[in-house]
Structure formats: structure tokens, C-alpha cells
Image (cartoon, rainbow, N blue to C red; front, side):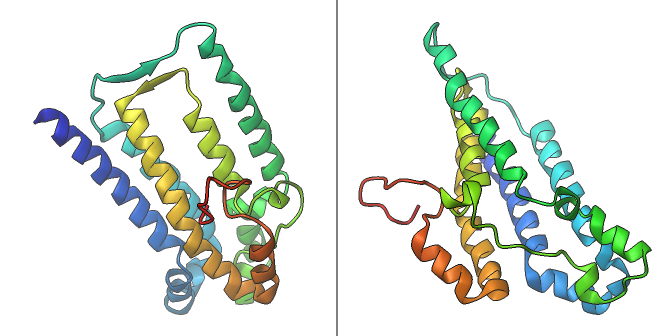
Length: 211
């Protein structure tokens, strides 16, 4: 009974993080801030990122950690997990190079505000359609490489497994909402990109085309 309660608490806490993160990522939420509190718009992105980090950190602190080990790979098999982890790290770094990290983190929005760029479009996040580099592999390489990094582990506890599965599911569901926003911004250009490039997995998983 205690184990079931622990699992329920873990999933509940992750759901709180996921729902709050998703609500703040909605265009409707940002538009509401832009209309009701336009003076806060330059700080929206950096606040969004900071809150996501804080909430995920709190998730790891407050959730129970059942003392259950799902698997513990023995040598040399444990070392084999380093290969996909290394690929994932390189892939993440390569993908992040496609971004303007200052824009992504919200620094540039504040900089434009300090330079008296009061136009709403200037203060808001500047979006760029990435279709080169890792984005030729799949439409969400950040999700792909993060899943690889989290999934290939030599040692897996129940808590980490639940977090990994919940994160993977959240990435998959979140990709639909993210792509709706991208279609609003880039229109037919993104729709054509969707037709040519897979969502997360760069290859077919049996007959499942949804990934």
C-alpha cells in the first residue's frame, strides 16, 4: 500500500509540474499577459524558464524515492550505456547550437526592453523555424536526445523509471501543442516540414507512424 501511495505521489507531483509548465507555454497565457500586464512581457520568457527549473527541482526534492531497483547492469554492459549517452550529449549540444540561447532564455527580450524597444513584437520572443542540422533528423531533436540521455542508464530505480516514462509521455503530448503554435507562426512552411520529417523518432517503430 505504501508503494502504491509513493507511485501516486510521484505521478501527481510530475503532473503538477507538467500542467503548470504547459499552461504558461500557451500563446493564450502570453497574450493575456501582453494585454493585461504589458509591462511584464519582457520578463515573461526568463520567468518561464526560471519557474520551470525551480518546479522541476522541487519535484525531485519533495517526491518519495522508493528503495526499489529495476535493474543494475554488470560490467561490461554498464559501460555500453555510455555510448548512447555520449551520442545524446553531442546531439543536445549540436541542437542547442541552432538556437540563439540568449533569446531562448529571455535575456534578449530584457535587453530590447532596456533599449526602449516598446513594440510588443520586439519585446516578445523571436521565433525561428529550424529545418537544418539535427532538425533534418526529426522535428524535435531536443526531445529525442533528452529521452536518449535519460533512458540509457546502467542503474535504474523505480523513481527514476517513473520520471523517465512521465517525461517521455510529456514530451510526446507536448509536441502536438508546440506544433500547433508553430503552425500559427509559420503556416504552410511548417506543414510541409511536418510531411517530410518525423516527429521524434527518426525511424519507423514497426507500423507506428505517430512518433
